[in-house]
Image 1 (cartoon, rainbow, N blue to C red):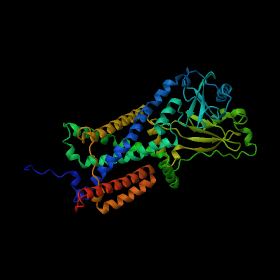
Image 2: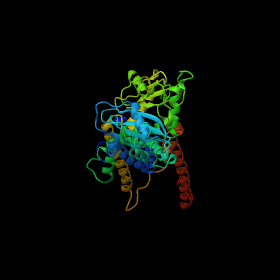
Image 3: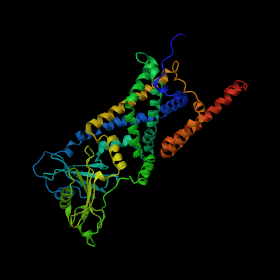
Image 4: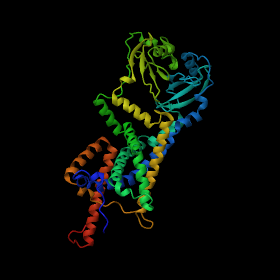
Amino acid sequence: MTSAPPAPSAEASGPGARSRWAPLRPLVLRLHFYAGVLVAPFLLVAAVTGLLYAGSLQAERLVYGHELTVPAGKTPLPVSAQVAAARKAHPEGAVAAVRPSPEAGATTRVLLSGVPGVDPEHTLAVFVDPYTGKVRGALEQYGSTGALPLRTWIDGLHRDLHLGDTGRLYSELAASWLWVITAGGLVLWFSRRRALRRVRGTGGRRRTLGLHGTVGVWTAAGFLFLSATGLTWSAYAGAHIDELRTSLGQATPSVSASTTAGEHAGHGTAAGPGGAPGRGAGLDQVLAAARTAGLGDPVEIVPPAHGHSAYVVRQIQRSWPEKQDSVAVDPVTGKVTDELRFADYPVLAKLTRWGIDLHTGVLLGPVNQIALAVLAVALILLILWGYRMWWQRGRGSAFGRPVPRGAWAEVPPYLLVPALAAVAVLGWFVPLLGIPLAAFLAADIVLGEIAHRRGRRTYGGAPGMK
């Protein structure tokens, strides 16, 4: 060939840069390929269900509009009167919390626990018109986000496919591997960026590769974020993350609900018959004390758990700017006994809160939801393009051959040993990354040995044949 040699790329600008890192590329390519092929089905399910969840807030407001909204009035009834109306319609169970109407035209929610026929992990939300005291309906509610049946069903589908703890393994597996596949794709893309400039305008596999790589690069930061935040509340990696945060003094704090009001403290709680407010400060005085302490809407009032605990009033706005302050109010005197401001949370506790709220699409409102929907669609396309590239590598009606084995043997020890140590630590910290990776390596070694022995029998054990 007489063409001039290509100009050196940026990645080779440093002396020895290419020679040091080039052996890693085949290993990354093999990991990216197999992880993509094997984990992609789980990621596809997570992306499709995540796309559904991105629009669940609007769907919930549409489906449950009668329960959530009322004609705006002039003066709302006292909270205690609204709770009394809810208890008259639903005397079963006990009052677990009260969420006063946060704005004009919104209903008050009275949350009841221990209601027959309601999932023990859920509460029955009784919706009360704050201006008339009329009960608008009752629905099951899940969690502190206030998710109603539709959103709860979609959330369960995304989280565990409605299969309980066993189903949670799918979502944790997807979150554990998403960042690995993303990081590997970035390494492969930028290591070939000079060659890939010629992909534009071509067809077939090169065009698919160009689409796959370009979309992957532009959405990589979002995927890394989804992976990290998804792991924070996963079953196994999430537990390790909580332990790490606790050991660093970065656990999420909570307001102290203990009270020293004396031996008569139990006479002033909200634990009357059926969970209705009893003697003492009462809900109205408690809410007024929280307002005086600076807690604006929306808030949730949690009655005392027993005779020596206080009311807890906490802000529940997770959209930006977040309102997450909380106070404890003595059930006898109606005075604030403890305060906790979100501004005083440890850094990692704040980041965890913001990360989860971004992941669930509530922090930045519709913009947040649109971004999540775009990421979900992009992930679906990337998976489909990935399988298409595998198909296009093949001949006839067969998929292409896998990436050849033995790439790890080409990696020099000064890179391989630290890499293996890092993988071991990550595998312990993120079990659904480490266990499948160990299983893959074991299967790969076994299959390689079988292929090696077959080759020796085929070629009569000729030297150098594998």
